[in-house]
Image (cartoon, rainbow, N blue to C red; front, top):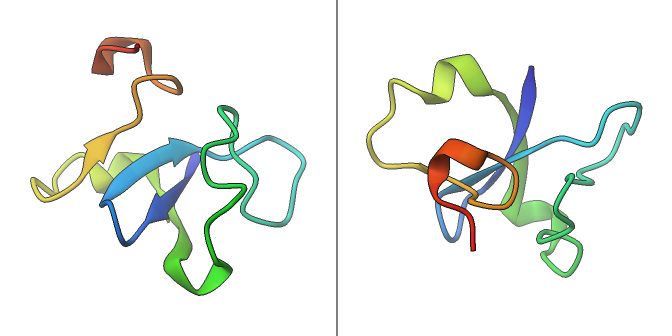
Amino acid sequence: MDGVLNETTKTIHKHEPGRSDFRTICGATSHVAHDRLRLISIDRSESDSSTRRCGRCFGEAGGY
């Protein structure tokens, strides 16, 4: 599964299925400049301790 990494906050969000841009399920990145976002593999991001998962996109991350 693909995710969207906000490079400023180091937060990974779930990519909205069927969208080619940086749209996320939670909508939290809608106001972020595209040069601060990148698509990454969520599986690959699990090994990176410098990132965290969005609580709205990932239920196990704590949510709001």
